[in-house]
Image (cartoon, rainbow, N blue to C red; front, side, top):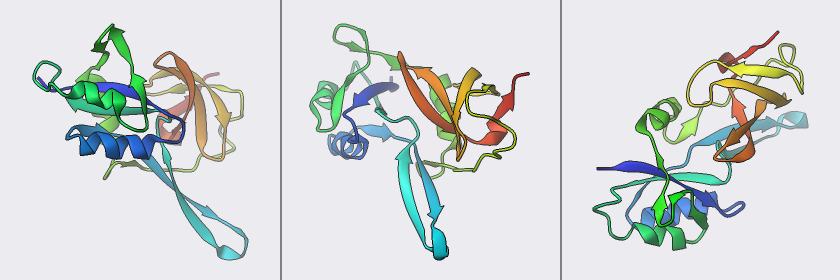
Amino acid sequence: MLSWYVAQTEPFRGILAEAEIKALGFEVFNPKIKTTRVWSRGRTTESVSHYIPGYIFTRFDINEDTGWQRINDARGVKEFMWAAPETPARVRDSAMEPLMGLCVDGFLPGRLADETLFKVGQVVKVKGGIFSGPVTAVALKRLTVMMEIFGAKREITLAKKDVESII
């Protein structure tokens, strides 16, 4: 049965890891955010960043796909998140589906936060999805919150419609 697994990537090597895993014949999900920055005099630049920096999802049947161990040796991949020795941690489909449902061609919609609604350091609540619950707002150019994901603190960018103030 096909299942999703998560691998940690080397710093700034998520795109390389994605390409390498695909080249091995495995499905990959690496959600990204595309942002446009407007400079003075109207010049704009577009950049792509990872929605979950340092992690990538890959899908395979652990019982049927005998070559899945090669993913751990792919360039850009640091290691799988392990449930037990020699057994990568499976990510439930119910956790993956909401995140995948938000993506369009692998990108999440980037929205600017209304800086008047939230303050840096304020505890806010994520309304739903796999990241629901209270978190701390750490930046407001885009609404960036600090969350604990896979045992490490990570900054995650969310749409303001997905966050509400906790009074």
